[in-house]
Length: 105
Image (cartoon, rainbow, N blue to C red; front, side):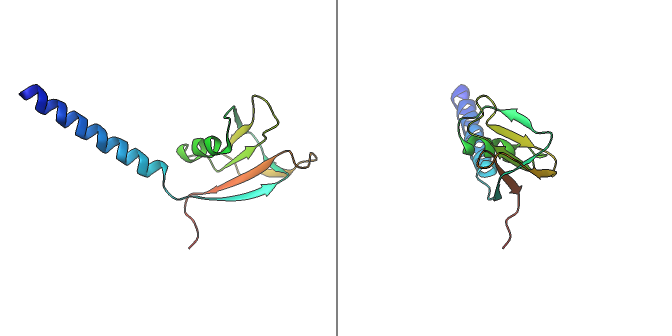
């Protein structure tokens, strides 16, 4: 009987942790999208979707923006921790998404 009670408590705690994780991941953030600019000193990632790239940024407390370059095989997503940006000469290739952890009301 004690084993069953302990097992139920562990399962309940796990469910609570999963619930809290979902709240944290699904918190409301806003993104400002700007085409044809990119940041400096980003870390490349090969996520297959923009949503995965943005989720990585949201989960990284020092991330301030992502650059999305879908045509760049192996380096589609760039996680940025600095706010320096510049215009790119390659039009239509890179889209810059600036993260705002609190949306304006």
